[in-house]
Amino acid sequence: KKGEPQLGLIDYGQVKALRKEDRLLMCKIIIALADENKSEVIRLMKEAGYKSQNMNDDVIFLYAKVSYDEDNDDLTGGKHIQLFMEDLQAQDPIEALPKDFIMVGRISVMLRGLGHALHQPRSVAKAWRPIAESVLKNEGLL
Image (cartoon, rainbow, N blue to C red; front, side, top):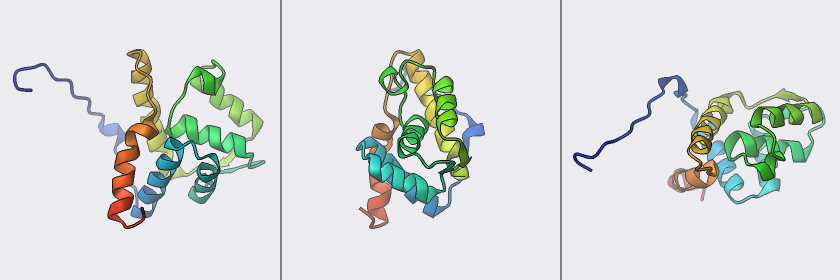
């Protein structure tokens, strides 16, 4: 509103252009995460190029959840996100990641970190879901 203080956050280091196919796939992953649709998240992560030594479904799902959605004590067992990710790596070593989605994961973690600092934890997938749905609807995919 006019005359009220405003806060703007700009980090041009987070700019990443995704190909249309990758944007659509990330939209599907976001919706699956928001729906807690574990089997769909796993399928989409594999489609995106995620590969690990054992292709452990639980690890794939947790990697996607922590990378693109949320982290909380229930999910991480109370561990710091970095330690939790290291534990996932020890359980099933990652061999290939969807490289174009690394920046998406990074910004998700950064936004959640800000939310935690403000005692306002959020599900990024639930927040981004309306955008993902709009994109998929505009493409006739939803």
